[in-house]
Length: 179
Image (cartoon, rainbow, N blue to C red; front, side, top):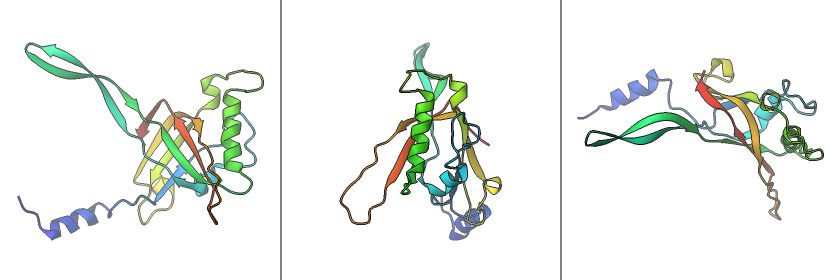
């Protein structure tokens, strides 16, 4: 089966063009968290987010014999964690924010662990088109429900001239949906 270049161009123009990896926004609400976040805002986190990913989903299956045939049957799904990398500023506010969030979840001094509903929030990740800059105008966005940072990754320091600091956090969540 052959296709013409006009069909390909029509597909691209009818879909609004090719999706770009560098056109995205994130929303991590800081207002609803039960610890002091006055030194950073969700808007700052969005501006400083250097990279992230849209999560995948894997169907969990088990093998079942139906007569002489072996078939897979779905019984649930699993999701991957999402890692976000942020540009580090000299005040290390991003790292402090995630460190404070970790310490709120599990107070290292007292050993007290909080209930999950007190330390989770919903995070939105949106892919933007060439003509949109806001999440409300996005044509594809997902929400991570009950998300929280499970890992604050190492900050690499080196003697490289003018190298910048990257701050990365890995988030776990209950589920995600397209919104």
